[in-house]
Image 1 (cartoon, rainbow, N blue to C red):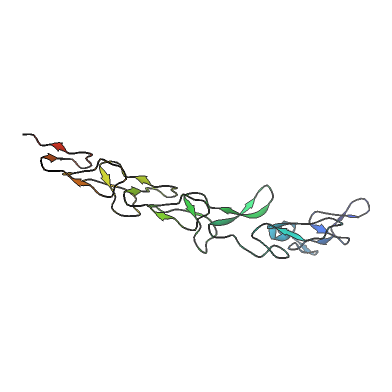
Image 2 (tube, rainbow, N blue to C red; image 1 turned 30 degrees about the horizontal axis):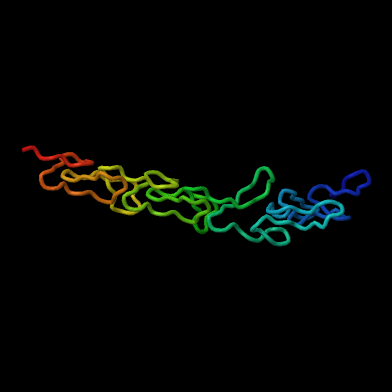
Length: 193
């Protein structure tokens, strides 16, 4: 098993040495699983004159690359070009929770602006995230506010109040002699005399 060539002096892929032994992680000659050589986490030095040692993708290690795991914020994915597993950083707006195996979107009211994260951050007061998977928070528009961290929306300033800046956590009261009769005002109008 595993020999090829005109005089059987060559080994098939996944086999090595003068006896064409199966590379580590590939099972036994009676139960061959070529797709699992080096645990699909490294490359075998295969061939008739080769050593059969596995060169493991980082962070995997061991004789058959079966030890090691992806770090926090990285998920184990298959590279379809090489058919080997590798660690890939979670994208912005995603994170990898502890004891999970795939990246998840940040929840509403949270964001993550870096790749490879193990958690998401609350939006600061005056800012919000109305959907999941956000890489940044949006500022509350003028006439609105958000006084809590982790907000999913902003609240319009009440009648008699205004806010003429974006990204604020509160509204200002109209000064004496001025008014705003509508909610969400950006400014107060002078009272008519």
